[in-house]
Length: 68
Image (cartoon, rainbow, N blue to C red; front, side, top):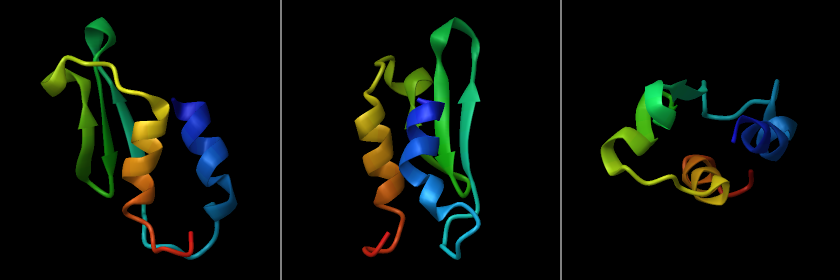
């Protein structure tokens, strides 16, 4: 998932955009949470379901301006 996020958004690195950070927070037992600028985007801990990388990318992209 980290590789997918980096490859998808690497062109925005060091470019002005509204996101300060994307954080993947690993936990035990394969659980994890993804936050964007402090807002929870996805929690496997809460849902108990492993989502797709594409879903996470869509959630991050939804927080970017339309031109990104």
